[in-house]
View 1: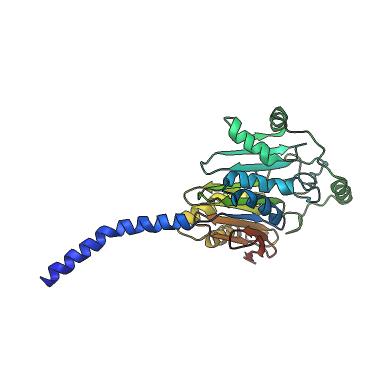
View 2: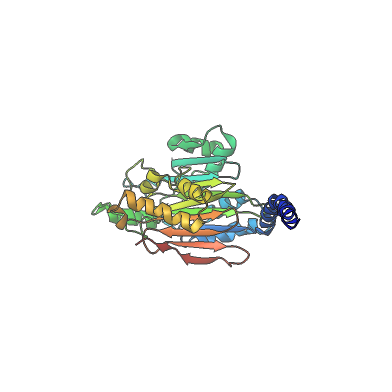
Length: 321
């Protein structure tokens, strides 16, 4: 009799187990609060703008676009948008991509004369059957959609370029000439994720060079069931491992955002054991529960966090070397 009673009790508990898991997931969703994370020091300003939208119940897509536009429009920032350092021919070309919670995405590359490529990328996503527009086609699309043609090469950037021409040596300095990207990912109050990435690319690059920044899956990837990730640094190495997609897939396998970023960086080291000691690559990730993590090859990679608990604070990521 005692054995039968225990058997019935265990059966009753087992029947409630699936319900308890559902309740736990539901409780987790209720507890989720908005959070936005961005790469580098200029992520602080980007987060402030994004937080205006997130804190008022807005959509994460609107937040990441608004955040990315801040460094794009700052003429003092030499690695994003207006004021970006040019290619070796003196032409400022911009790359950007954006992705929302529905896996919609848009991108532009080698775009000249437009201050806010991230907004052009969103137009590509929302108004065309395509994902990616480049060069003159991207510029024509931007002009047709009301964007203003402007000069992007500022006096300061032009002076730096002319100084570089004296030697014309191309060896980017880690954390100086290749922290060339703002990547920003956000989770809104409805627990939806979006991300954006925008850059003027490597300083003094070959004309036509495109790094990882406008490539969905490389510099940016969003899976609304799992999380989002973005990257910064030498884009060629991020492309080789499809870095941001890799980070998200690692989170899908049960890794935390921090663990996923660390494993992605380790993949680069494995692929490029010599080169990895001289360059910088960093990853930043955010999962569906609002947990975030970051990791880089070298010391010096900073990222900004804004949430109800974190008052827009800058952190330095841990590094492999």
